[in-house]
Length: 350
Image 1 (tube, rainbow, N blue to C red):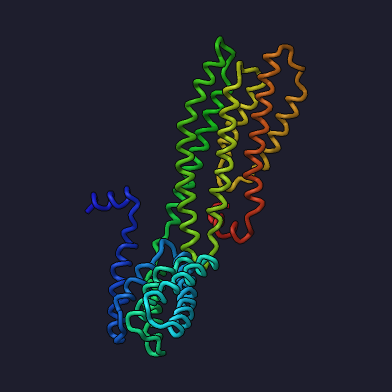
Image 2 (image 1 turned 120 degrees about the vertical axis):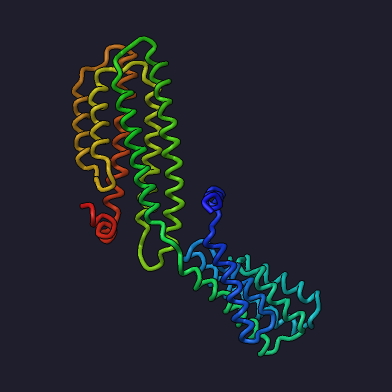
């Protein structure tokens, strides 16, 4: 059983969804049979098609399919009553219905509605009682799918675990950058720093993987939560993704250093301070003020004497401005979240 569970997880198979499809389709057919409806098996197929990956998606698709079904009945009634119950008439129905479905962006119902319309063709009947039969088949299948999908196991705990991994990755990267930028001048420093900077690739790749996983789970969490606002997690991961881009750029800047001038020391210390204060609830205001002091110190420094010194100090300036952008991304995130989000998601931590 454990190996089976691991196999499902490895292949990204939603076992709960499979159970819902099997049980829901059977239930829908049984209900249709109990009501004495013709083509009761179609209710099970509609249930199968109605069960989506998230609550929100299930409701949206159900709404579109109901709208498509009403359109299909009207088009089929006009055509069958006008030209008779012939295969060529059904072809005309498909031509009009499929075209309209794509024009009005409701293609989700094409296959399902087309199958239901074939019942009219087979029975050569579009009287009120038989139309009611098809409407009941549609409603039973759709409602069974919607009701089953009201239960979705929460993944908030997993999203928070992703957030923790992301923060650990960023701390590690900032710490490595601090160590790299504080090196003493040595022969062939360019080759050495660039080579050592590539150790950040592994950490950046890890961060990228965790960001993608968190983004996927944050979207899923948002679409499974209908009565509360969980966009905060999506906003958080987007903010960290933007910071990831800045960290990748700083890593490239490190490779441009041909030597490490003494002005690198305060930047190295500043990176350590970011690591110490790095967490979800820091608005970065204090760190930005500290960065301004470092920039003022740089401006008070004597002008570089050699071309090499000028180029290396220019790289340090670029890194400083990248760090400013990195911190501003966090400050903007904190400033743009609502008071309700702060009370909901930070209440136990501030």
